[in-house]
Structure formats: C-alpha cells, structure tokens
Image (cartoon, rainbow, N blue to C red; front, top):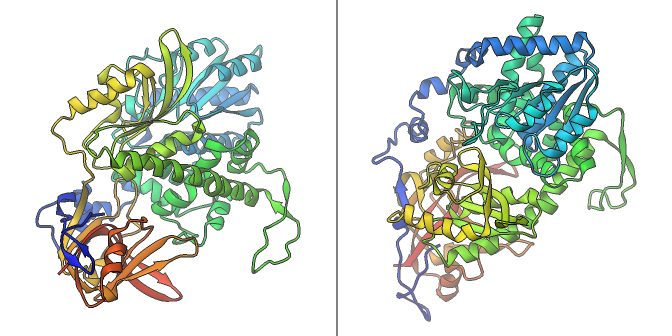
Length: 610
C-alpha cells in the first residue's frame, strides 16, 4: 500500500506516492496482440507452440537413467519375489515421499502380488534414513537378506546405507542433488536423474519411480505403472518442480486428468466448491486444494493419522469406517451419528488439520513476522526464531513469509545444546524472481551453517545460534547495493484500466498456470473514478474490502488493514472528488450466481485526489 500525505481532501492533507517504484516490467514493450505467447515467453518458455502441444514425444527414454542399474533393480525385485524375501519401503515425510512410496507399494503388492511388502513411516519432519529407522530395520532383519527401497531420498545417506547393506540390498530412487561434501554412496543401487545423463532434472521422486516402473512394465509386458499416474501429477505440483519442462508438464497434466486414487478423489470432493473441475483438476487446484491437505496431515497429524493417510493412498482401508457426528448447520439442524467412509474420514482429517490448525497458526505467526519486517524494509535476509512452534509447520511459515515479504526466509527452532553452543534447525525458503538465485548454495558458501540439504530454494538448514547474526551480516555484505524492497514483476503496464479482452485472455490460460508458470501480475495507472463510486464493504468475519468498477471490470482489494489509506481517504471525501488510482494485481473471471464478472484482485495500490 502507498502511504499518502500532503494534498487537501476534507480535513486531511495528502501527497501522492507513485506505485511505479515497486513495479518492473518483465519485458519492455510487451506484445499486446499475442498475450498468451508473451506471458509464456516471460516465464522462460521459448517454444510456445511445443509447450501448448505436448504428447508422448516429450518423454525421455528410461534407459538414460542407467540401463544397468534398472536391470539390477529388476533382478533384486524379481529375486525378492521368487524367494519370498521381506521388502521394506521407507516413506519420506512430504507429499512426494508418500506418493512415491505408495506408487512403489501398489506396484509390488497389488500388481506383482508380493505379500511381504512393508512400509516404514519416517517420524517427525525428517527426511531419508534416520537413526531410529536404521534401528527399526536392524530389528526386523532376518537370516536372509531383505530388500530396502528408498523413494524420494537416500542418495546422500551413505553412512546409514553402509550399515544396512550388511543385511539388505538397497534400492534408492531419488531426485535430490548430492549433498555438499557427502561421501559417494556405493552401498545402494541408485536411480537419480541428478547424477546421470537423464536430460530432465525437474522430475520429482514419484515421477522417477514412475520411470522405473515403466521399465519394469516392459519386463513384465504390462502397463500397470499408469494405474497410479495421478500420484505423479499431485507430487510434481506438491514438490514445486519446474513445470516449464515439457516432459514434467506432460506427466503432471496427464496425471491430473486421470484421477483414480480413492483418497485423492475424497480430498477433491471435500474441496469441490473451490476446485475448477473435480473430474480433471489443474495444477493450481492441486497446489491449493489437494497437496496442502495431505501435507498438513504429514506435518502435524498424529502417528495414527499419518498411517491412515498412507493406508488411504495405497487403498488398504480393510472395510474400516469411523463414527462421526456432523456439526449442526442450516441444512442439517439435527445431525445424527453416521458411519463415515475411510477415505472420506481421512480427507476430512486432512482438511481440518489444514484449516483449523496449520492455517490459523501460520496466519498469526506470519502477521507477527511481517510487522517486524515492515520496520526493516532493506534487510536482505529474514531469520525467525520459532522454538515453540510445531516443527511440522516451520517450512509452511517460511514459505508464507518469503512469498509475502518477498525476501529469502529462514525459520528456526532450537533442537539441542552441545559443546559448540545452541543448535537450531529449521527450513529455508526463497521466492520467485528473487535477487538470490541459489539460496542453499549461498548458505553453504557463507561457511556459517552446519547443514543445508534439499532443493536450491526450499531446503532444511541447521545453524548454531552464535552464527545467526553473522549470517545476516554476510547476506547484507554479499548483496550490498541490491534493492531488497518488494518489487512486482509485471507482464503489462496499462493506462486508464485493464481492457476486458485482456482479462478474458489471461483467464483462458488458467489451466496452464503452475509451478514456475505463474499467473501474471498486471499493473495499471491513471484509473480515474469518483470517490462516491468506491465502495468499502465489510464481511461477516469483520474483514473489509474496497471495490470499484471501470469499463465492466471490477477491481477489489481484500483484507484491508485498520489504517488502510483508501478507507481513510474516503472518510475525508465528500463523494464528488475524482480519484486517480494505480493498481497491481492478478485478473480472472469470477462466476457467482451464474454471472461472470471480469475482475482484478488488487495486491497493492496508490491513490491521489485530482
């Protein structure tokens, strides 16, 4: 919001502060005649025609993952099946981990008919092999060598694999880069596009499992891998993989167009009022209404709730139902207890954990953080101590703060104290179009963190307390001269109002928007309306918004602060004043009561009285 002071209006004095300092055009002189192509090119997609016409030709051969390793995996699985060996699958602690493990479990258990398949859930928000997992596997070992499969993790777990390799053959199917300084893992058969000639480095763990299962399909003359392609679609979105890549985009779209999993169907049904198409959700639907529900359970659910979530993904409900009494409502004023279907129950638990627990906590914590950041606009790095916060929510908060404040963010909590001092562990997140290109590498280069592992701009971090201030100072020096204030990268800057046809064309692209192909910010200057035509409305929950209409396009700003400048200005106006407004936001066509309304949701604005 732009703060005003200096110009007479009623009893107040206002001065206009331009929004232009916050706006940067992605491309100078953007093409207004081909909006779709311009927006896609602004996202780094040069072959627009190819991107809009994806097909099987986009898929790379699984042989590029390493034919010899794929054949070894086939031998190990076939041997385990023939000799009735125990097979253990490690379930990693995120949506990709659950989906990749479920896909592998379903293939081995349901298609190949292997009954000695067991899964192990990683506790807390820990990734890969952990001491308690190793202990549990060693306890389960038998006289015969077992088979351990680690999807979506394990590449850098060399020490643990060394220990377990005495008793288990180990298969790692991963997509994470090798951790800095880690010893080469020669104790497992590893499939990982990051360490081989496979050209697409943007596959998630579930997608890599799918490629492996495609190879197994060819050995078994089958197409069973495609039965769980919906898990690939959900996981690709959840793990924020780069969907500008043609193969990644094609797999994601094909997966979301073929939803068969009973749990995912139940989650979609629970959010049906928000999802664009319940039969074929798009990537934005998956990003907002499918994967966050599952992630909330993985992060904050009880052990029983997490186990039920995985059972639902592998569709092993065993006929179980739950007693449930719905809340009173206008439609159901006298509810009675019912037997709730297993999948409906798990979906409801996921929904409740997301809305009643995760969202409320993170919304409050984010507001507190933003209030602090607002006083330090020039800071290059945000570091928050949230030692009392559930570890499962640390990453969610880091992501929310980073994207809202548009600053690289680390959220930490104290885990222990040793001879080196107080050790903090947490999550680091970066925002799109950040002045920091590789957040993880920056932390490693600083030499001040004890560990930074995961994706380049979304990863786990460990740091001692005495190094936190040093790290903040390192960022200040390293990015000295860089403007760290909030900047909106816009596709178009227009004058007088957003034309209806632009809103329509952007809205028609909504099925294309996804990870790294974000819906565009548009900016507009010199919108002139009478003060009397700007409405300030209040919702039942007390949240205020203002709205006005220009040339049939509605402009709305939600969740106004108490000191919102527009509200204060209107209070001092008589109604016949003409306001000159600048806005930046996102456009869409809203449907309500059968009426289509082109609108802009305002992210930020400036206003003056002419």
